[in-house]
Image 1: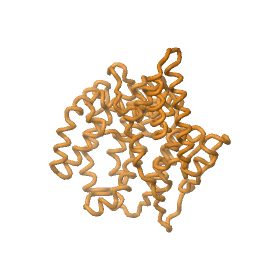
Image 2: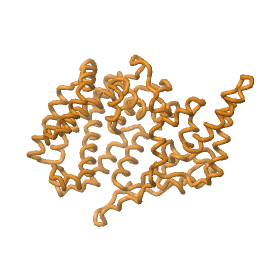
Image 3: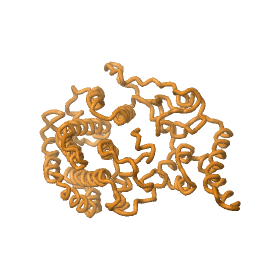
Image 4: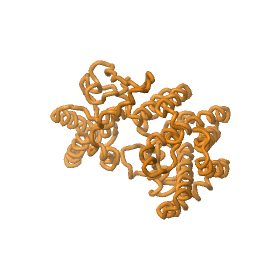
Length: 396
């Protein structure tokens, strides 16, 4: 993770989500997707903005930034692009199918899109050009000439979003190289989505380029694009891109679904220890406070036992209580362990990156997994923690 992420965990993801809520209403938060979060991370890396308000932190999904003026421009831009691209996506589906649900979705999204379009036009974003190129998708699918031919609208729209974002961040000298980066990332998005939709499109009869151009080895094509993109990205972002793509291809297990196999007694003891440290900080310099101290000890112990990874990153009682409103933490309780990855077809050669053996943690006693690797790993994990509970975990 970037250094700034230590100060604001999951900042691009949670920050973009909350900025969507502030600018375009709470309903717009369901539009959040990993592609525009990737854009936000890239802009953050170049903007160098490290000290953002606590409202962007991931402890409480219901806590929102107070004023629009305080929203970082990188997150405003990523949120606006999210809404605009969602509008074009809905319009494309409605044009293709004419189904009532897409008409309803278009009407529901229209107010947010009008506000996003106004903001993007104010930044000089070529929204009309993006609209025109995306509108050509149907005609291209009716007469496909190649995979790149049908992927070009997505490639161009993504390239424009990336390059204009760098200009907005005050980095016009990087706009040209970022345009090329965005085009290849858009190609990756298009091919990866087509790869995942093959079975569904085969049943429904919808257009899928991988069902049209059968000679293309989609899996190796996707991995080749990742190989091309990695050197152009900050190391942490490139590593995370490969991890996410390999998970979606079934080449490595989804490690977030796994938990540390620590005995409940050890987990409870660590939770009590953490709760006592929070209580001592909260009562420092106060007289009495027995009732508050008991409340802090009881509530923090319970939360640190249920959500050890999230709770132990908090710095106050209030932040710890907010973890109970963290949707991702709540979802982790009910998530099922991931099954084994889908094996690749035996007759196709695999790249060297397709086999991802687990790495033993470094540092000798503590669990040194990267953030968001072992969701439930906390302080005091045994030496074999990552190897035991997070097969494929990239520890450093």
